[in-house]
Every structure is written in C-alpha cells, then in structure tokens.
Image (cartoon, rainbow, N blue to C red; front, side, top):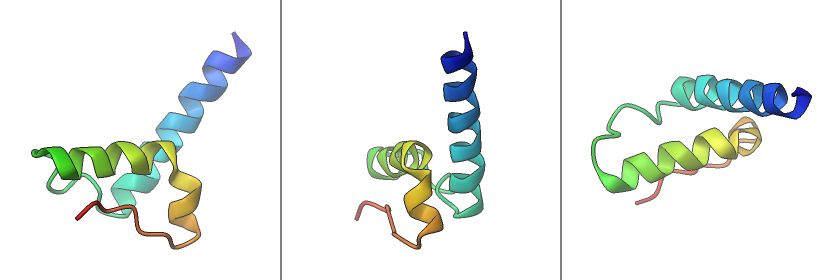
Length: 55
C-alpha cells in the first residue's frame, strides 16, 4: 500500500513539474505526448535543467 501511494505522489509531482515546464502545451501529437510522458517519469532531470522535448 505504501509503495502505491509513493508512486502516485511521484507521478503527481512529475505532472506538476512537467506542466510548469510547458510540456503539456502541444500534447496532441505523438512527439509532444512522448515528451510529456518522459517529463512526468523523469521529472528530477527537469529540475536539473535537462531538456526532454523530443524534436
């Protein structure tokens, strides 16, 4: 139960961080959608300044 809640919190924080870095603006096509999903899962990298936008 604890790991499920921890995972949920991790993903929610990832979604907030990805949103603040504008990863959801054009998420209607495949590349921006994949970028947004990567940003949610790898959100600590965003805080380090790494760009996860797929071009």
